[in-house]
Image (cartoon, rainbow, N blue to C red; front, side, top):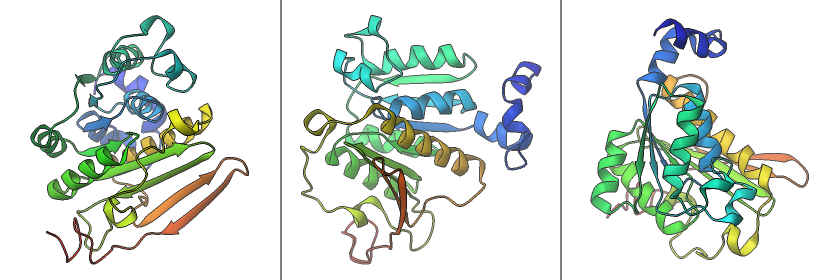
Length: 250
């Protein structure tokens, strides 16, 4: 690291859990963020600020006025721009010392597998089950850790799925195919700070995985009720008959 980097990241380097070695790991890391909306905005911004060296942003949507209530990576003067281009501009404004790769497309199976294999961690900030299931399959196949988040109305949840760990569950162990695809912010609404809280937890879990400290949310589902500000942690065991990660794999 050069002098500017030592100063920029000094407050992290002061932490025994990070130190210079941990910061260098962050600078050498590559993270795939899928979805640059309410969750992806704080995730990408905090990872950029923390010094993750390569951020790959994947989203095919464009910035709409209704997004600006919660999607803080975007600005009023970027309406109509692609979300990845808008987010890349914000991230490089925060930290010009990182690389930002903008993928302005819906990732096909082959491209998705390639991007997941190249990433050290994948962060799922999407808003539909078909994307979440596809990401999960690719992460299990490539043995890449997946940090999953969701937020709707006044409820949020975060979990980490790490197929490198024997007996660890995957996203398919938690949800079955056929869940309600229409359950989204567009239909149900969401309070702006909630996605910031959930996205911040996702970013924190990602940094823990990259540096290698603490206990990741593997085998646990963290749920937030924003009305009461109550956090609940549920154990999440592996489904031995899971068609993706269990003994019933097909």
